[in-house]
Amino acid sequence: GIEIPIIGYIDLRYPGEVRELKTSSKRRRSIIDDHAFQVSTYAMAIRQESGVWPSAVLDYICPTGMESFQLKNGNQWVKRVIDTANSIRSLLASASTEAELCQLVQPDFSKALWRYRPNSRAAAKSLFEC
Figure (cartoon, rainbow, N blue to C red):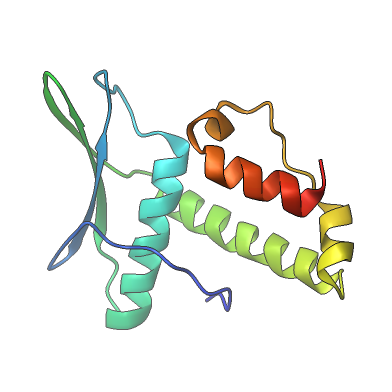
């Protein structure tokens, strides 16, 4: 298990299955890695709560319809979630103050994600004094 707290909302939960809904302007041919990570995290939480691994499905809704993909290689994704949690734990343990932590981490504002989140970008720039 992981001791790092997780905040998230499961879109659809059925007996033995967790489904995550995503919207897209175009049809998807496969699961996007970030989405696989997210639904794996939810599946892990359900497993911890119920003792049963649910199947994990991503539903991509686009203007022309919906494509659904069941997550494959679940063990690989569980490992990535745990490795990420361990990395976060190690990073947090290496800094005793917020200022020290900010010196260890610098956001990459050239990533497209920041264009769509101007409030988050402004807050991060202020926090990291960029």
